[in-house]
Length: 234
Image (cartoon, rainbow, N blue to C red; front, side):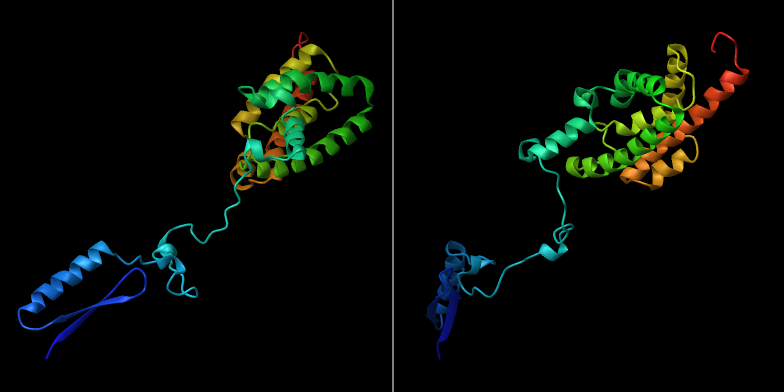
């Protein structure tokens, strides 16, 4: 009785080899050679059956089944997104080293001078509150566009913190400079509860709130300095 070997081809057909006796060895060798020269793709790219799809090992690969929202690259961002980021970074200031500090020095201090000089305390408080709310939206949406958390390119949170620091502080360039350095130091140190906010809240609200906390501490220290500090500061 002969033995029939049937080996698959990539085209979906089969090759048959009849073997008996000594021909058994040659049949085996021919089958091996055929499988080497015409390997069958494990996926077959749907040539054998369009209903069967190959997913070898895909379920074991981490992250394969996750929907990852990747940020649009610089070249793929819409005009609206570019303008939004330009406003959030206050032009080139968001690209500078220590962008938050630079933004407060270049934009925050002059804006605070305008607000302190031309707005009543109530109007100052309303504008500051509105700016903080806008900053939360700016950082939430801007971070999504950039694909980052608390991106250094967005600097509205630092400005909001400085506006709070100078609330009801009589304007002078000397006091503005003191408030600037104190607020920047407290923002870096993350005095409680700013450290908890920074650690647990990674949304736009958390990004802005830790600067508001630093600004509130600075505001209290500035008023203590006005009451009890040396005369040269006042």
